[in-house]
Image 1 (cartoon, rainbow, N blue to C red):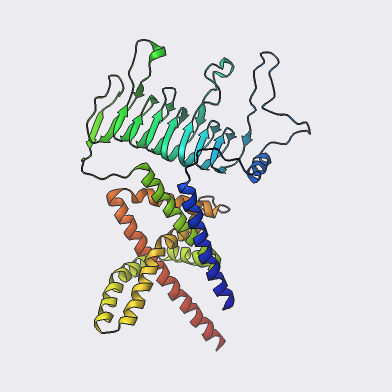
Image 2 (cartoon, one colour):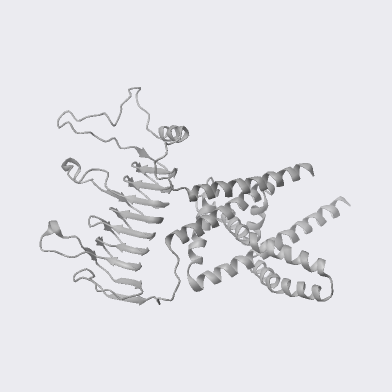
Length: 421
């Protein structure tokens, strides 16, 4: 009993500490770069390839023929996770890149997808424009997709498959090349470079540049497919920008839209809330999600039925108890009902994580899969009608999984008692 109480006290202190640290981090306004911790330096050194004992400083190595500094590329043969205030990713990564920080710069080459969340995010060339020796490799190259969320600005000067971005300001340079589509939402959007397929844009102001007879002065976009944009006012698209069709979706001026900062804060709040609950579940009841994932896999329809029935009946039953002057029972039922609804997202996401970890190759990265599922669910909730359906499904399945887990535990206890007798 004492051990359980100790766990609960530590859990509450952990929640308070995490929330306090989060508030301090978000409100920090000092733009002065903070030194990278010694642990981060040791971690970066651990990823460097082994040498024959000879130490080489990449920053001091000089080409004898022309006297120029020769950068040393670092290979990373796995997914790369970066958590710092100021991040510069200049490596060659054979895997995905996950970056969370304040000011993030991506200059390397990634054979995978990029997931980046910060205040200012920049994708740019690793070499100066006048570096003729590396003129065929002076770009940031991403073979997969870019998923970027920034509270202030995203600057994109790179090559990628698709871009999914949300920020206050988004700038795409003329040297950029997108192999498929872009989906951008923000306030001030500057779109240049070449887009092989379609562009889906939502914003207040747009800048596509203009075409010129002089190639050196040409600073406009080329959209080989269709342009679909949403704004309060229709804009005039310069000639020869869109090769396909242009579709305008008017956004009413009375509509209150969230800023990129609001979206970022919502996402961070959702992540912290579900992550803290997930860690508490795995600490207090390590086998809980394994049990609920089995329930979800074996009897999804029964779980949904129990959930929808509980979702409707519980408030009605609480009202009946209140009318019968059984206010204490009514209050207990409402508290339990509200508590399960409050943690339903963690129950559902944790169950899906346990269910899908082996199928998706996340057996050793279960926590990362939980974060990805949380982010995907949050993104889908932002869609007007779809978000309502997803929220309702989470509540229903959360109730169903919690109740069915309790019923299964009771049946197991009864079976054990019968076996002993």
